[in-house]
Length: 245
Image (cartoon, rainbow, N blue to C red):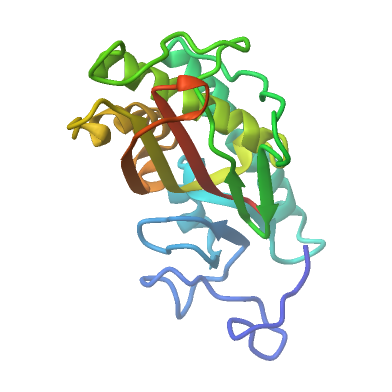
């Protein structure tokens, strides 16, 4: 809503479109805050009307839209209309809507049983505590993977863990503000010699990729086999995400 002062504004003139093919001549009307865009990456970009028309139907690629010139009624009118479109499309792609496609729901975060909190936000990053596959206070399958718990059951429990992790994120930032899944750490309580921990942790990763897509859902990951886990859980998941400012 203001005339910005940066390298793209020269002598108080209107900014120029920063798209490579328009940079030198097309006047910009919007600043878009991108996150993980295949062409622009993660930064603010000034775009003209034509380039905006190309981007507005992919709201997963940007966080915010700002009209550049205050008092430009046509730009403001367009911004309001297009922002409404973006919100409608984004609502259809919300975390809860994506979970519903898998017949899953976002649970209520579990109350910590120790001297810790479920999640901590620092800047635009949220780190969760390790999440067990608790469903209404109980773990459906307990024991070691490859023993009393099958790998398929453990993978299902990893899915429950990541749902609980998203619920923990919701305590400090709305889950729909997540712009990037950064890292997943999985601990698998397997029998001696069990080496398929990554396949179990895939249960968590696949849910995240379904929700946030390849660009923003694929993440760095570690999968460990461990001797024991709290409450004899077969798997435990930690999650790190980036959220909108």
